[in-house]
Image 1 (cartoon, rainbow, N blue to C red):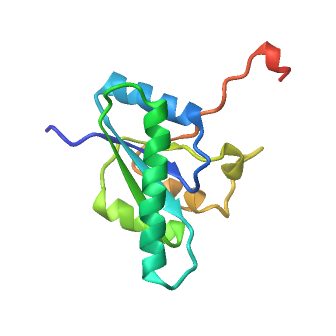
Image 2 (image 1 turned 30 degrees about the horizontal axis):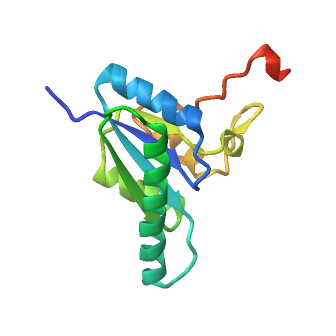
Image 3 (image 1 turned 60 degrees about the vertical axis):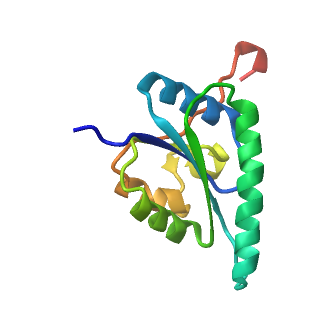
Length: 147
């Protein structure tokens, strides 16, 4: 059975970590998988036009940022959803029920504590429901960094 293969890279703002992009691109190249970048923006405005304008603007900005990092011919698409991140992620999952890997592309410190994922974060709430691994790439450090 030949199923559609995707890697979803998740963001919740425009703090795009390059190590996550590079990890996702490398994995996509090795596995012949398409990349889908998903930006989930919190927006409390009741005005639907504000949400649509915000979605289009961020989709363009994120696209430009990602294309400046990716120099390869990896197939990719960008989806921006505006609203409650948890709710928007569930809606996204109904439209994209099957992806092979989820990669966190946002700030790793937002998610991690010393003991694991922060339980209050929306991604920690859905991690157990994912039918694929969740990868949080870390920045490589060298001895020169003093860490």
